[in-house]
Length: 392
Image (cartoon, rainbow, N blue to C red):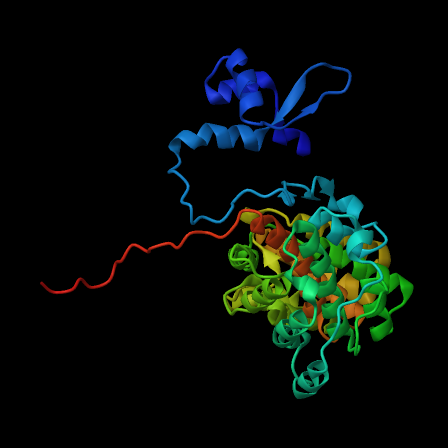
């Protein structure tokens, strides 16, 4: 519960080993965050801030080469996920994905998703023809540097300027996924829904899945985005970096193929528990499921509720729930957001399910790029050499 993440002044003072008066001095000097208690003059204090303050005496000094480990973008608690302090449980009901992207970037949506559209150079058509058999992800990696060059405002590195470029990136990426020659001003989920022939209800599910996927903290691709953003590149290059890292063999998103195969097996069999039990018997990992020790994925919990509202009587969904029940019975495994997102993609009939996931995640990467860029370029770091020593 979120309430458990706050503690009283007396509890905080005890954790820090100081008097209550000294603690109140820390509140002012150390910027400890707090929230008011209804009908009381007392306040409760954010436990993580107090824990961090308590641990500072035991931590080595930060290196000037360290990337910023603190962020104001996303907070993950045991039972919820917050973007800029707002719960995704409420944000999924916003009418557009763009409004959530703007929230992540800390700007007004109308300021970054206005009438102006990013220009596409003439070379885009030729390159897209050459890459016609490639995924929208590979097309984006190849084309974003070309698009950046013909859009001068890409070189505006103020937070507002990077957010405007971020809007251009999302609209250009949407055009690539939808197969359009040019970006348009329609809402992102509407543009994709019309390209794939989705119903209004399906389009709403797509929008909600994208909102849930927008950011999830400092996973490897986000860390790489922050690293390159600290050198002063535009959001075009930052998102290209995120895409390149995210499709790496050792990153979790690359499990899309394995998850897709599992979902397909589950919905195509009359005994949906068998794909689960077979993998367990063969000693294979169950793609798309989390071990009991890792806890539940909050995004998965929210998405499961949304799917149940739309597909409770759907035979495929009932098979999926039977498989989830089997996984829980066998080892306490819980479905991941990726598994449920894969099922949603199957029901939506999207040709490239991972593309819409990374389109959504691009909004989070841009938020991290903006935040990291404010810290300036990091100093060159000399590694501690551990190889063979030269002879005398």
